[in-house]
Length: 157
Image (cartoon, rainbow, N blue to C red):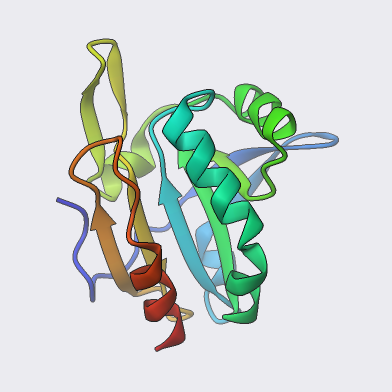
């Protein structure tokens, strides 16, 4: 089960691929400035994950109007994430949790994706400017998408 609403969001620093190489993104840099949406997903170059990130990319303007920064998090390396994002025109900042530390901290580890390896479960969190979790959801299966209407409603509160 994911961390509970009302919990302090575990801080983290993860890598993203930038034009000049990997760079660090620290969650707490958003505290006091913007709300944060974390979208954990199982793996790049897979159908449901591509659909989710492309759909959310097309709705980034709504998140920005709500004062939110959106991050996609998977256990893939930042170079694979970058290639996938370029191929699919994904505009969400993707963060690499290669060591699964953040996935475990948010308690959304999926133990056995198609019998191959541990990965992030599909999950969504809304974190307030104060660093407290306002919404938390882990889907029943990796094929299910989060309730994005509920995510947006939590941002509006």
